[in-house]
Image (cartoon, rainbow, N blue to C red; front, side, top):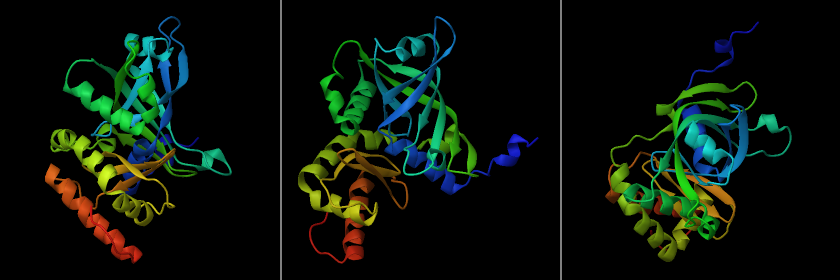
Amino acid sequence: MTDKKDVLRETDADAVRLAKTLVRKARYAVIATLDPATGGPIATRVGLSTDHDGTPVILVSALSAHTPALIADPRCSLLVGEVGKGDPLAHPRITVFAKAREITREGVEHTRIEWRYLAHQPKAKLYAGLGDFRFFRLEPTGASLNGGFGRAYQLTADDLLSLNPVNDELAAAEKNAVEHMNDDHAEAIALYARFYAKAPDGSWRITGIDAEGFDIADGDDVQRIWFSTPLGSAKDMHMSLVRMAGEARAGLGTTGETA
């Protein structure tokens, strides 16, 4: 019989980057909760975003089976990972073990999470304001990463999260920065998409910026772009975006605007 430890690889920087990328890029996930009536497992699909520190965030209706389950018992797990061509088990996926915390409607935290979620999930604007919908942060306690056959890792919460002291400062500046980039610097965003994400031309928009990188989307296509070094201040956000636009332009051999 094979010992479980024998099949697990040592967690390294590549595994951490893959895990974070899977969660940051995800638009949906399968959440597993415990039925308060029977104690049995429930698995359902939810829309997904992340807070600045990388904590998964969901918006759910009180009518959904998982909502009363989370209120009765906050323990849950989240399965994330896109299936591509061929064997679905050959593609990376991650199960995040978490405890759910409901976000009350009053306060700065709700405002921040609502804006960030809707930037990632714009269609949710149709129902986010309804009285029976609420946000939960699914605060990780650990994770199981499968990067494909023979690539299994056990991760800690610290592996998944970006516990950067600049998170609050970036959160305060993010909305204006994202709107400015999307309204005035579409060409720079197109450069990011082509050079860093190797993505095709399209109508790319930035959907969120955090200390470690930023997310861009063109419809349902979502890409994660990482900063070479984590941001140290809100000022670094602008400087990094300008520098990266210049690097992308040089790398692609184009001329034009800066961010």
